[in-house]
Length: 344
Image (cartoon, rainbow, N blue to C red; front, top):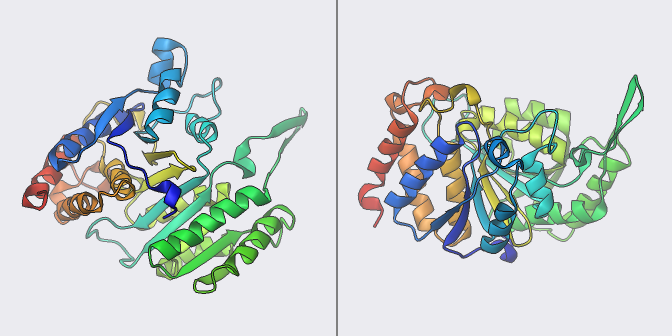
């Protein structure tokens, strides 16, 4: 892990979000209390619920809190349709230059899955590519979306992936592009990767096209270790990866910049089940595990991951997204019961 990504602070900004966000963040607070970790949440919300009360989607107090605390963890936020930001998540990433979206893809428990050896990490560039949102209407019948790839931003995400491999004693980096077709934009990204790979001769390096990668991920996902790619490809491949290990309800994520990180559950706000005590809180809890790792509380992270693993051994504990009937607070209480004596 990069040295400038080692955060140490007892204060963490907590963003409940919309839809099921308040329920799964309440689950998080209960777990943190039982885990006995020295963290204090500063709760400031954003999203549709805030807009309806205050007329803004992201209050200035939230920007100020994240800037002060350097660490935030958030539930899902509803993206406004027809007005406001293109995406509140994207706005936060741009505001704090959170250029690395990191998503570990590994089953958190003994689930009945086709593959049991999946253990990859996707590094997705977070600030440019088609997600920069540079679009124009050329005529009433033609729209253009501009793909932006720069050397500077390609270098920092690719170096981050190589440094992660080295720091975590992993073995391989796979750079994913479509450089055979987009020879200038994706070609630049790939050229930068080839240059940086020479600085890490101890790390295996491979180049793959994004379409081939998608096929390989559903045929033989165990072959992947650390993937680094552009914004759009990373978004698609990480959701594909989530499907391999049980779904988005089990998928953690974090957006990192030089000195600020926002940890998040990457699934949507699921308004259809909001307030019904049906949501799966595990994705947010696993994201909190990533936070614990980064602030030097690896032992606490191990305890929490162990409680999640034990909970998922019994299908009666599963929430609806996993094929069960358990509730949000029911599965939370079960995980807390497994913290037990291991949480000294």
